[in-house]
Length: 467
Picture 1 (cartoon, rainbow, N blue to C red):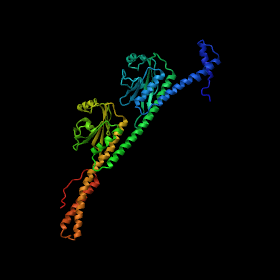
Picture 2: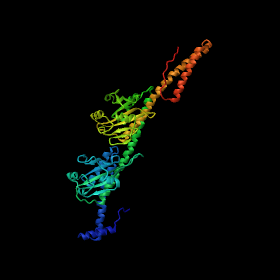
Picture 3: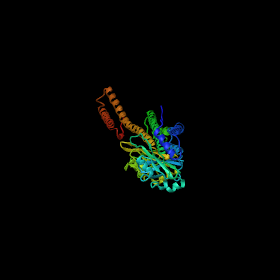
Picture 4: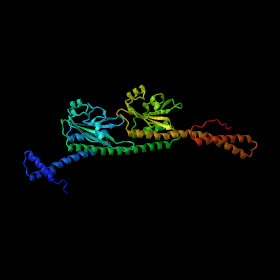
């Protein structure tokens, strides 16, 4: 099968162009040159292009997304003999194009975020089409021209990047790969553009594989959390939630990638929070008491809202994420100083509810090199909170069982006493004692009935005369 047939019209067009340039060749000579280009030069070009595409497809999907995209930038720069490349991702919450890596890997002279509107990056995301800039200094949408002069870059090709999401509640991540050249008034050929677009699209397969692996890891982590909690609780009686925390968290710390975690209880007056437990324990002042008047504690415990994603924090009934502790409107100055001294870059709070009331909450810290919580981290930690609620329900059940036990003992004791009177046959002589015993049996049976019907609140302890 002949993959590339000789196009006679193309050969004739080439011969005409050669004649115009003063190169007189016969039709047969031009056809021979065409065949040489097709069989030898084109083969090497296509082979090199395939190698570059395979280089992208072979990127390790376990790498962070930023490193995956920086590998794409490196491949495109080297193949197109460009000067540099940068990646920007669209942040729909802030309406900005956020820097997400570059090649060469440097953050100097690059803005962390640029506006979405009236910029080249924003235009590429909106249209999902490539954007050519033959001369940066003449391009109105390119704002930082002084930096371009300093770096010696004169032209740019911007191509769209799309990263798939697998959650129904999320949209695909849209971005742009900006490729910089030193040539001034550069003419971008259709071949250059198509190659850059093709390599950009290939990275979406790598990210898709990464997302699949991440989902698998997430499910495995959830299963291990549920299994560990079930096994630990299944071998214990009379368990308290802080005991569950102290047993489970150290064993799951590596699985959940927990750096710092703490458990707080809410006082009965709903005005105080007590630090019940922490991991690592030596880094927490267990027993400290805090006032719910602090805005962040009020947001966790009473949940007045508003809910949504804000500049420095995300607030929902199921969790509160403090992205920028230093700038957060919810945190008091002393807590901001503490977090800064501890190199804690973000904090995640997970409320634990019983009957829609927050009785406990968890706090997770992202510390040192761990800059922020990913969506996957938030899902794991909120899942852990839900599983931990099983321990809270067991704690509640332990209290209820305790309330059942007291009246049950009284009923059993007085029934045996009545049984003894009847066996002795001295019913009339002990009539008053039997009546008293039956009254107590009835009263305690009603208490058991009340507990069984409600399974809420605590039974009232009463002193029973067993003499």
